[in-house]
Image (cartoon, rainbow, N blue to C red; front, side, top):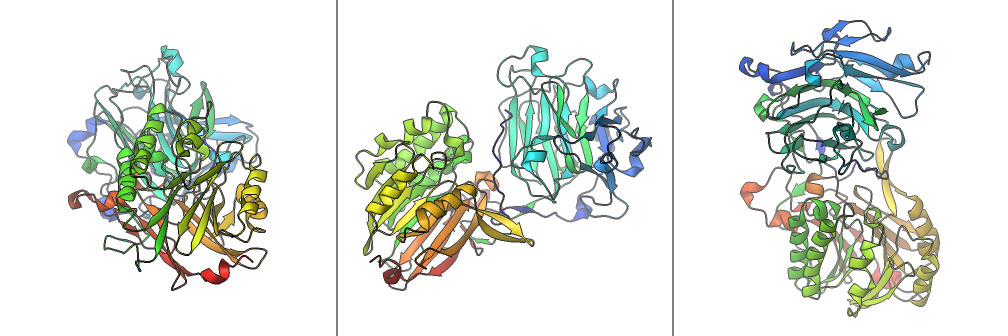
Length: 601
C-alpha cells in the first residue's frame, strides 16, 4: 500500500553502503536461449536512440530486446520553460563506471513548470502482457544528490498506467495499479495488483543512499514476489501473487508515477537500464551478478563483555522496532528474550524503547509487539516505552497497549502525563536514584508543563530524557554532524538547558547512530544520543544500545549488540551479520565525573 510518510533525516552513520563486486563479473550477457524471455530491454544510452533528440522533444529509445516495445519521450507542462532543456540530459555516469557507457539524468521535481518522462508506444506488445507465469523487472539507477522529500517523494521509476478501480478491484488501495517508485524515505516500493487478488501487494526495500548506483530486481516465480537491491533481499517474499493486472489500451511509464489516473511525481536521478522478462530469472541471469552491499561500519562477532566490573550497571535502549513488529517478529522476540534472560546477570536496571513500536496501525503489528514485550513482564524486567510517529492512530492503540494501565503494578513507574503518552520512572542504580522521563513527541506542548513539574519535583535525581525526536544527523562540508530537530530544540530549551539534573537524552526516529556532548546553563555536560537502525538490513538486525556506568573509573561505556545475530546459526550468517557494531558511534566510551556531575546543590 502506498504510504505517505513524514521525512526522516537520513544519517550517513551506521548505514549499509553499497559497493560493487568485480565489474567484469557484472555483465549484460544473457544466454541466447534465454533471450526469448526478455520482453523489453530499455538501455538509456545514446547508442540506443532509435530516432529524434532530447532537444526537439521527439526522442525514441529502442527496445534492445527487439520485441517492439520502443519508448517515446513525453513532455508535460510549459513547453517554453527555460528549465526544460535540463530536465533530461545525457550523462557519462554509469553503474560500472566504464568508458563509452552512459545513462540518462533526470532532473524532474514536484510542481515544476514542465517535466519529461517516457512511455511505451500505443501498440507495444508489453502493454498487454500480464506475466501469469512470473516476471523479472530489473532497474539500474541512482538517486539524485539533492534528494528532497518535498520535491521527489513517490517518484516513479516504472509504472503501469491505469487504476485498479478500472478493473473493478475495489478492495484496499484502488488508486495504484502497479508502480516501482521511491518513497519519501528513499525506500524502493514495488506495489502491484496481481490477477489472482482483489487488492495490491507491496514489497519494500530498506533506505537507499543518494548518489549511489543500485541494481534492483523484482522477481516473481509465478507465486511470490521478492524485491532485491544490490543482491540483498531483506524484506522477504510477498504473499502468493500471480501476474500483473493490465488494462486495455494502457501502457507503461518510465520515470513517472501515476495517482488517480494522472501523472504524479516524475523521476530525478539517473537511469541506465530497465529490463523486463516474462519469467523468474535466476541471479546468474540478471544484468548484474554478485552485487553485494558491504557494511562499511566496522563490526565483530568476537565477545565483548557487557560489564567491565561486577559493581557496574547498564541502562539499555531499544531503537525503533517498527520493522520487527511488521516483518520480523522473530527479531523482536529475540531481543526481549535476551533482555529477560540477562537482566540480572548484566545488571540491566532499566530498558527503554525510543518509539515507533509498530510500522503501521495494524492489529497484527500491535499484537506482535505486545507478544514480544510481554516477555519482559513475565520476568518482571523494568522497562519504559516512548511513542513514535508511527504509533499514533485513531482510537489511540498505543495507549490501549502501552498506556498507564500496563504499568499500574510496577513499582518503578511513578506517573503519566495529561496526554497519557508521557510518563516517568525512578530506579536505583549504584549510589543514585535515576529518573527516566518519557517526553512524547506528538504531545510535547500539551505535556510541557507536566514535564517541567516532574523535573522541578526531582531536582536531586540524575535524569535521562527519552523522546522519539530530539537530534538528527546531517552533512556539513561533507562531514556528518549532530543537529537539533525542531522538537529537540524545544526539549533542550525548555527541559534540559535549565534543569541541571538532566545529563542525557536518547532518541530514535532519524536513521543512524550519533552522539554529542553539550553544556547546559550550569556549564555541565549533557550527553545526547541517537540510536536508530531501521533502515539497515532486516530493519535493524536486532541491534540495541547498552550504556555501562562505571562510577569507580568515572566512565560510561557504550555498546551496540544484536542478540538475534548472536543466536543465529553460523551457516545462516551473511557478511553483514555482526553481533557488535564497532565504529566510533556504536562502540565508544566517555569520561564522566559522577560525583561532580550529580552534585545538584
